[in-house]
Image (cartoon, rainbow, N blue to C red):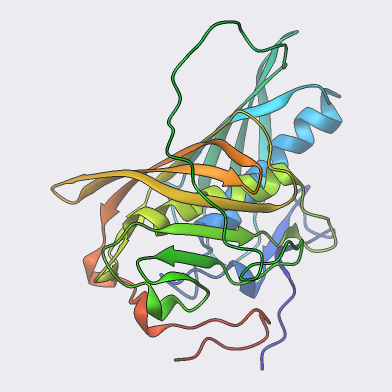
Length: 288
């Protein structure tokens, strides 16, 4: 048993860089034991953007409508910190950039757009009638406690990843842990982090996960109610090892927006998800 905190990062208040954090075991990627996964990185970048808008700018009325995360270098399991820049602030919007740094240089960045809500426009417009559905409550009860994601495929809903290594359409349902230990995760942090699950929902096929995403873009019409978020594969196109996948983002109250990832084939280091099983207690080692 390995003791693991239910957070992706722990604060390093004595570090020379302000807002420095250290990745915890929960942030470790399946691609490498020395690399943090995109869910943790996206969540940390979202946390920094939200801090700027809510605390530094003092704009509680603005809502997040887009976050684009570029994962251009591995984020190692080493101390990291963020820097931020307000590109534009006006009465109706704020545009905030965030960069994640480590000793070797920047590893990821995010551009976030925040808008001031008004009222719905009149008239009829088309929307997709294909609505995703959350898992039944007897399978996945309402909770704010982190858990192993529920996956839906042709095998139905379960947390046993071994049942879902196939070529069918995937849906991902997850309750986010804290981004930084000791801080309550916010709905925006939860959906910003969960957006990286688009790569799993879109790129997991009968041979496992054979693509690694270089980015993720999240668009939102509203925030989730709570910190549990679903992603249902919407479309996927692949040509010469370059794949573009998209998902519908939703909660138990309906759709929130969409996500898009661009990925590249990584077959030499593919991940066999069919040979893995996780437990809700993160102190338990993955087993077969």
